[in-house]
Length: 239
Image (cartoon, rainbow, N blue to C red; front, side, top):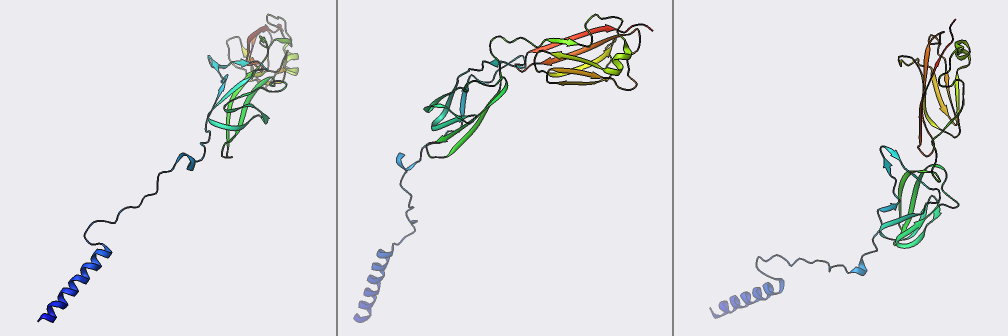
């Protein structure tokens, strides 16, 4: 009897030792978490946006022009170590950089292509524009010569039907030209505007006739987005 009791005590004591060693009860194991990262463990932040001054601007639907010697200020949302604009280097450091084209911005429409290198060596890219570039106080385009002038009378329709209409400008333009009758109905002549010239070519079945009033409507703009809108009215000669 004593031997059995002693055996029971030894077994119970052994199980208690095992339980203590391995952990008993319903408590879940303690969660192991990584220590918080210090500032030294996190790499430098990369720039994702850049503000350009002056920005592209519009007024009443038109893009306003900037001088060809404009200096642009670039402000990044994080510091960067190198910047190029249209493949030429900008000057500055960190958040603030400056750039101007050398010797100058080309006349007409220009978009800035901005590339930068972040402090971790990665790159970024953005565009700004388009800008309209012109120096001084540019004038709108002017017609320097034309097949007919406003107010002309006794215009020979046969000559116009054969040779068409042509107008030259003092600078390159883009836009439209069309021929209408006195009531404003489009005669659907082929209108072309290219370089410094606008032309109208007759279409079969829509030729000019005698003793009729016609209108030429010209709506063009130059490289600085300055417009020329003019209507030239003329009368063909009677038979």
